[in-house]
Length: 266
Ligand code: NAP
Image (cartoon, rainbow, N blue to C red; front, side, top):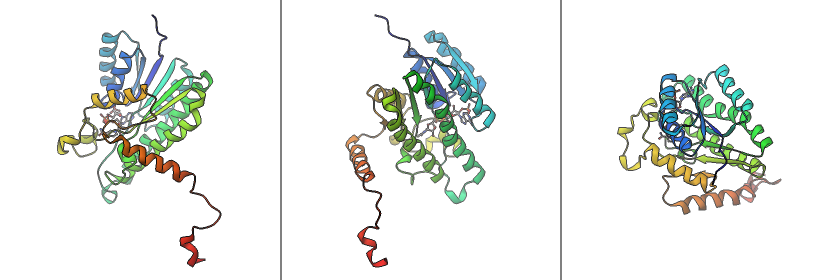
């Protein structure tokens, strides 16, 4: 039996860590690839290996997503290449440094990479997906999106944006044939930690997952149609209770009168 070709996946931050594993796994699932990151040598080496091993077409697009003209090149690719059926918004940076010890310019660049870039890339990809009635966006968020007290607050806030955007996009686009998934990794063994100033060796190994296990589990959730994937969460029922409480709250949050607890003040 022959299967329809799944199309092309564009993956940001594909030169290392989680993004490089997505590249490998998606090629093995039959996707052609467009790999985006700054380090062209690493992208080329990965592209060659994956193309040799899988026979897929692997294109490299070196782009600094913190830089508007480079970001615009990736946006244009997403708008113009109708073979693209999957966008993986994965590129991101983070840190554990406290607010008062953080450099504001660095925090601003983090927001541009973690928030502005995936937002602009989503705006570039989604209209084509909707017009073709087919497409998917996987957004790599983080567990800190629901637990922002764990690491740096700007990082947590940026990932809360990614999770919230994904939930809202799912509501808007699900019935238009566009799949959305937010992946919330816990600590994962990648360069992310050393780049953020705390090499992963400093963490309790009991809380650190391999990038391979993370991606394989998240793709299993993708196949199951799960909007939110948290591979490191064992007690799934805790998330389900949290989500049920959030949905319940969402119907009660607006009113034309203050709640009775404010009565004395009026
Ligand atoms: P990583 O190994 O450091 O990978 C980050 C990727 O983003 C690299 O390919 C890097 O490539 C790319 N990148 C960084 N800055 C960029 C820029 N300005 N323009 C374009 N590409 C850029 O870390 P990772 O853990 O795989 O991170 C992937 C995602 O997972 C991030 O969004 C991160 O927030 C999220 N996450 C990670 C963890 C964890 O514990 N590792 C946990 C939760 C969530 P170049 O340097 O070549 O540009």
